[in-house]
Image (cartoon, rainbow, N blue to C red):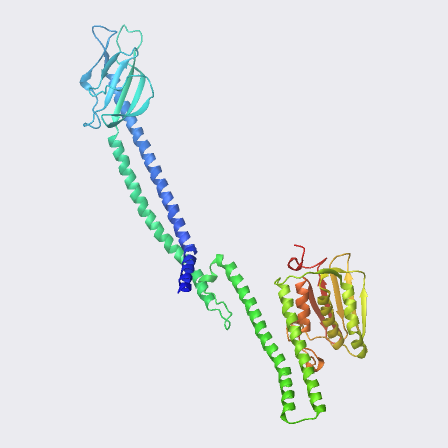
Amino acid sequence: MARVEMARVEMAKIERTKSSIKRRLVWSVVASQALLAAGLLCAGVFYTYRRLLSTLDANMQAHAMSLAALVRYSEDTPAKLYFDSTLTPQSVDPQHPDLYAVWRENNELLTRSPNWPKQLQLTNGANHWNFESSGIPYHGIRLSRVPVLDREEGVPRPETLNILYASPTLHLRSQIKNTAIFIAISSLVLLSVTVLLALWGIRKGLLPLQNLADEAALVSANNWQLHLPPQVEEVEELHPLTESMTRMLSRLERSFEQQREFLGNAAHELKTPVAVLKSTLQSLLHRPRSSEEYRAGLEQSLQDLERLERLLEWMLRLARAEQWAHGALRRDLEVVDVTVTCEAAVERIRAWAESRRTQVHLLTNGTALFRADPEDLQLVWTNLLENAVRYSPEGSSVEVAVHSNNGGPARITFQDHGSGIPASDLPHIFERFYRGDPSRDRATGGFGLGLAIAKGLIAAYGGTITADSTPGKGTRMTVELPAGGTPLELSTNH
């Protein structure tokens, strides 16, 4: 029960950490549209406020000029001014009358509105300002040096006036509030419509990805084909993904088939010596035999066991080579001379080659240093030499050449003069247990693993091995090793 509860907790953690592309896109759309709506709201309110305030200023300025028109010169005393209060301008809001005051340049007050607040001083200051009076917000303007429009004889120059005019802004604020509500509602409606359209578009846009996932789920060991629906192939952004998946499935299918073929071939190769060994032992136990017969049977069994042991050793060697090629194992390597390893391989098979009247010639142009395990290189050269000698006619020769250019890449070639390899078999000769030539059977001692092991080991050291063959003239195997050493994963200097 405790383990089940822990598993549930772990699954809950995984679910919480899962990320959704659809959720991200939806939140991005909602956030961007909400930001746009907020921006439109602020811009609309600000623009409306400025326009209404500009209109209010124009109206107040017109009323202030009408006040200036009501200032007149006294008929009895020409230099004296008075204000005609019979024609005062009407307020925009009758419940909250406008405020105004008119005074001369010498600060002599000519008139002011009856509701003029006591705390409001008639001092020079800003031309536009906001204030409150009795809890009512006002916006005021100040006009300076406004000429008296009334003309009187005997006055040397027109006198100027200072006028202060203020109107309540309750109506302006109400209009701004209504405008803000209208814009907010409109933005919310547009935001809702946009989000719905975005959800529809995102769902439709991600549908090919879901279809691709559904098709990928149908891939199995019996079906490696990725059938892409037309709506997936039409999406340009999915092309890199589908191409990568197709190549990956192709490689997986090839690897799976190779593993399946390897298991089948390995089982077949192991079945024969085991069956022969079992048959030999059963025949020995079937009836009493002489000591010589027992000895002969046991010797035959030991030969079968040796062949079985050699096959298992080669299979393990191939498995290790493939692990090294993928960097799964690390080894301590030393710098060796490739030429010396080739000489050792030639000496190892020289006696067998001479028994077939085949000459092996080694040509070198100096030292070729390489960081590797000398046993690995000798195994590769031995396998290539055995193939070259085995398929060369008696009385012919095999040429081995080692070329190195002052520490550069090393090239080793193995040339025989046999019947060659058919073009149809050439691409498959490095495959495990492949026997294109019927002569490559157990009678010759071959398992079909020599070239596969050679290629695996060379690939593990970052090199390449290729085959060129002309039917009737012979085959050339070419090994190229990188300059100076091995790939990084095999080096101990890291």
